[in-house]
Amino acid sequence: MAEGCAASSDERRAALDAIAGGHALKFLLLEEMLGAWQPEQPHHYLALLAVDPRRQRQGLGSALLAAHHRRLGQRNLPAYLAATTLRNRRFYRRHGYTTGPSMALPDSGPILWRMWRGTSDGHRRSPGLSARLHRRSL
Image 1 (cartoon, rainbow, N blue to C red):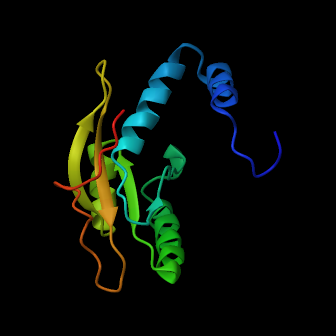
Image 2 (tube, rainbow, N blue to C red; image 1 turned 30 degrees about the vertical axis):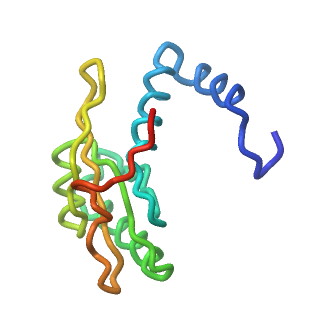
Image 3 (cartoon, one colour; image 1 turned 45 degrees about the vertical axis):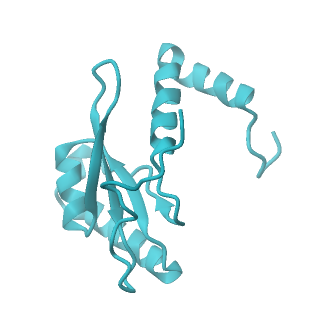
């Protein structure tokens, strides 16, 4: 596959099957669910923020997030994410995110909380996470 080109859906599915094996369909469903609830307005989707568990509670996650927010601030971009635990939800709320409706993943999957952090120019309100998120059909 050429650099900069998106993988075809067949290539993507084959790669996911190789990585996730029997769990590939769950990952595809998760991706579809998250994509269906993305805000329509321009934003950055924070897919992952991780700190080695042995290094947690030392301010590393906050430092990473602060650096990320500075870059978003330079571009005047709000941020959107899906928190995967109550602990993570509290962490992001401390960093200025508001919580929207949760979504439960099927088959006893975890609950995810959609979260939004507006821009520093006064557009801090969510794009209607509570009621007006654009839901694309699955």
